Image (tube, rainbow, N blue to C red; front, side, top):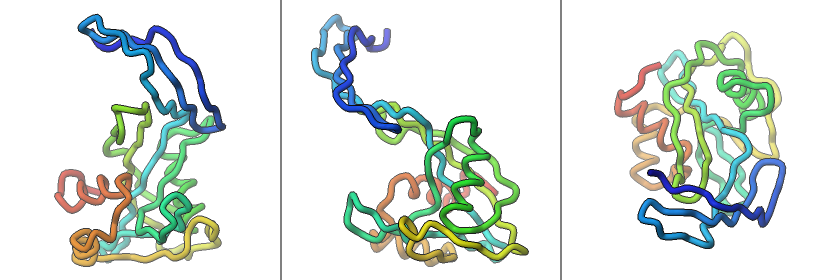
Length: 180
C-alpha cells in the first residue's frame, strides 16, 4: 500500500503551483496530520541542444531566487494544449532565439518527490544553424553560449553549474547514457 491522502487544505495557490497541507495515512496505519506538499499544476521540460561542433547550448540565467547569474540549459513549463516537444521548441525559441530540429524525449523525472509532484521531461535535440537567433527573453537570460564537453566538465568540477534541472540532462549526456 502506498501512503494515501485523507484530506487536503490548500494554503496558497498561484497559476502554476499550490502549497497544500495534506492529512496522510501511511502504510503502517500511522496518520500524518500535516504533510506539506507543493502541487505543481503543469509539468516542465528541459532541453539539451547540440550544434554541429558537438557543443552544448547554455544560457546565463538571471535568477531572482538565488540572486545569482546561473549557467543552465533552456527549460520551462509545459503550457495548456502543448505536448512535451511543442513546449521544448517554444522554450528554446523564447530563451535562445534558436529554431530546433530533431527533438526527442529521452527521460522524465521527479526532482523532489518527497515534497512535490513536479515532473520534468528531458528533451535532447539540435538547432537549425541556418537560422540565426532572433530576440530572446532578456529579463530571464543574460547570455547564450556554446560549450564543449571539456568546458562543461570544468564548470561542473568548479561547482559553477548549480541548477539540478540542468545537471541531470548534462550528466546523462556526458555519461553517454542517452544519445542525441
